[in-house]
Amino acid sequence: MRAVSRDSEFLFPGLIAVVILAALALDAFIYHHGLRVLGFPAALGLATAGLCALRLCQRAQERKRAGQVLSDDPSIEPASAIAVMPALRAMLGLIAAVPLVWLFGFAIGLPLYVGGYVKWRGSAWWVALLCAVIALAAALGFIELLGMPQPQGPLVWP
Image (tube, rainbow, N blue to C red; front, top):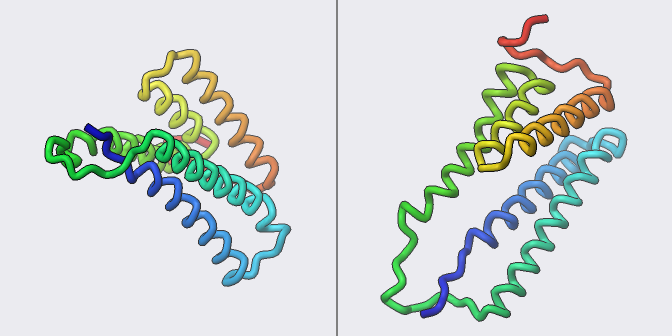
C-alpha cells in the first residue's frame, strides 16, 4: 500500500507565501509606501516567503525520494473528519491570539497567548514561560522601535 500524499503540506506554505507577497505588493504599489515605512515589514515578509519556498522545495524532494503518489488503492480511505481535527485544533489555537491581544493589549496579550499556546501544544512549563518572556521582549522591543503608543485592552488598567 502506498502512502497518500498530504496536499496541505504544499498548500499551507504556498498560501502563506502568496498572501505575504500580495500584501507587500499592495502596500508598495497601491499605497505607495517607501522604504522607510515598508523596509522592516518587507525584510521580514521576504524572509518568510523565502522560508516557505524553501519548505516547498524540501517537501517536493521528500515526496520524490519516498515515491509518494496519490494511490487508486481502494483500501486507502479518503480524508475523514478525524484527520481534519488536528488542523482545526491548530487553527483555533492561532485564532485565540485575537481576543487576548484585544483584551489585554499587544504587550501583555501576545506573551500570554504565546505561553498558553506553547503549553497547550504539550511543552513543559519552563519552555512555555521562556517563550512568553521572549514574546514579551519582542513585543516591547517592537513598540519601542516604532516609538508608537499602543492601545491598551479593556482589561488593562492605566
